[in-house]
Amino acid sequence: MRKALRWLLALTVLIGTLSTAGAATAAQQSEATDIKDRLLAVPGMSLVQEKPYPGYRFFVFHYTQPVDHRRPSKGTFEQRITVLHKDVSRPTVFYTGGYNVSTTPSRREPTQIVDGNQVSMEYRYFTPSRPSPADWSKLDIWQAASDQHRIFEALKPIYSENWISTGGSKGGMTATYYERFYPRDMDGVVAYVAPNDVVNKEDSAYDRFFATVGTKECRDRLNGVQREALVRREVLKERYAAYAAENGYTFTTVGSLDKAYESTVLDYVWGFWQYSVVADCATVPADAKNATDDEIWNSVDTIAGFSFYTDQGLSPYTPYYYQAGTQLGAPTIHFPHIEKKYIRYGYLPPRSYVPRDIEMRFQPHAMRDIDSWVKRNARQMLFVYGENDPWGAEPFRLGKGARDSYVMTAPGANHGANVAGLVADEKALATAKILKWADVAPAAVRQDASEAKPLARFDRKLDVRDVEREPALRP
Image 1 (spheres, rainbow, N blue to C red):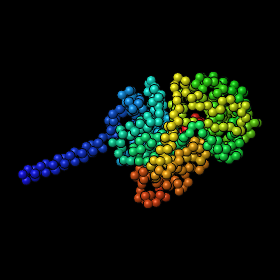
Image 2 (image 1 turned 135 degrees about the vertical axis):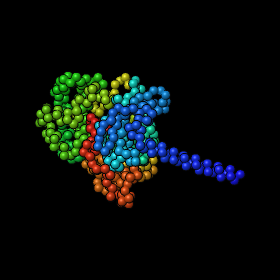
Image 3 (image 1 turned 45 degrees about the vertical axis):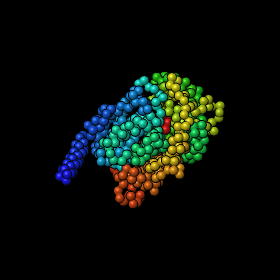
Image 4 (image 1 turned 60 degrees about the vertical axis):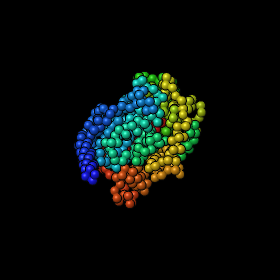
């Protein structure tokens, strides 16, 4: 009996040894496999192209996603993602801008801070990541968050270290929604300039913002040009009509050239503060009433862009306006410096910018749910805003239930606000937190946040610091 027991114990030890050795060998073989082959081994992953960049491997992939994550058997589409690969032993940053994905190698600020890998996702329904035919009812924040969750689950076995999600503007909103629906995926969230339109019909915060932003001199210059563009509507519309004819622009979606003209002019002040700083006021005509038609036209066109509210300009942004009109909400502001007789339409709702054959119905509970969840459940989340950014007028706020989470504002910054632009002590704290959440904080940083700094050197090509300029009045 004892001999049998000794034999069984020896056999168990031998099997355990062989299993451990087998696992180690498999791990070594996996690590030795080229990263491209490992990524392509993921079911549903196909390579579009690889682009070289010193110190990295950069890939553009298509990843097969279900159109409806609740009923995955009801059709699929190809979602475009990119991977900036450094090393599987480094943390990974999961980025989306909430729109199209860039196929040029770039590194977001958290990626530079943690010196890690970066996975970037194109938001569903932005072409080419759009099902055909497109069932627009499947474009919502839960479906998009489920896209991210599925990508994360597919890549986590390869990139097994900590993950941090991030994004700017609509991308910051996206990172927040992802955390709400899949709070166990990420080890930290860095959301830049993320609007939080909890009650769509209550937008007085924006009116208060525009009454005090910047300096009075700058506000007066901008208000003067905006008003004068409407005073001269008929004259400048003739120029607009010629401009549209020359470029083949049409106005079916918005309804008329007149509506497109007013929409562009009403975006002017918002667009300036979204993308410019107080110093740029020097480029705005100081005496609008005595400015030439060319000066008024050029200022509005440079800041707001007369091409945008054409069918051709709106088409790429149909998914955004659909979401704004169904879940995200959209701001409405007033213009006390312009007499009512000059404003025919006011800020048009998102429905005005979406083709009529696409059905829309607003869901007021969607943003209330997100706002409530963040206040009660935020864990290791950082929100960064710009002091002079209109979209920060309705920010995310933390409640008593939040833990290890922060809201910080960069002084004088616009829609391109980032950690680097924060005041010194907040910059250090934010950097230290990102490093800790990624589990790469040096010992000195763990003891003293003021020692925190990015682990990777700044790269002029990779580390784009300019705001991602979308046409005005888009987050």
